[in-house]
Length: 92
Image 1 (cartoon, rainbow, N blue to C red):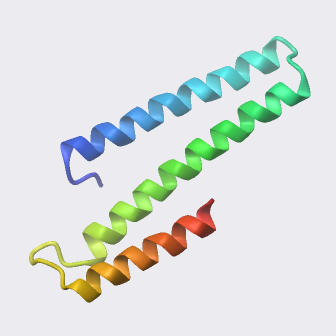
Image 2: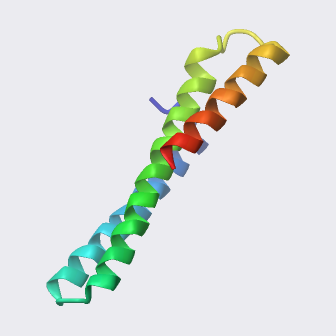
């Protein structure tokens, strides 16, 4: 799925941060933390998952929807940018 080592590392770093957030939720529930704290932790984890999903979708658009064997035209690049912007606005 990942097409470059740097991209792979970036996604893995996101997953590791997400794992930490999930563990924080577990600790909060285990120690009977207040509802507000738990909801804040859940919101942060949801944001992290959304950001990860946006990153994967953007990579998919830029790598698979535009032929990587050639340099994309300006209209193709602009269309991809517009699609990514629309998706990011709906994902968030």
